[in-house]
Image 1 (cartoon, rainbow, N blue to C red):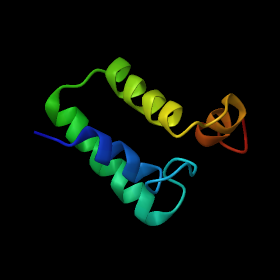
Image 2: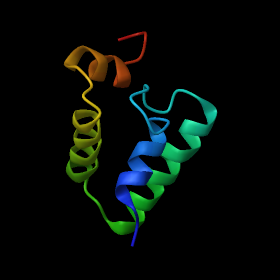
Image 3: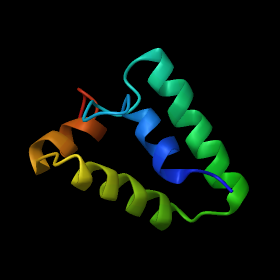
Amino acid sequence: MADWGRLVAGGFAYMDASFAVHAKDRERALLYMQEALAAGLSWHEVERQLIAYMHNQRMTRRRSTKTFCSPLD
């Protein structure tokens, strides 16, 4: 069984960093998405896990929006 908490945290560099910005974080985020797909998780469940992680890290709404929006948004 996958350790979802650890897989999600990896995309955030195991802290309150932006999601999958650095190469190693992208590798871990991709691993999380591959595991989620293989386990049949819905996008809703993936989203729930990501939001729960950000909430647990006490990311503000502004910080969490910046985490997932590209500079072109």
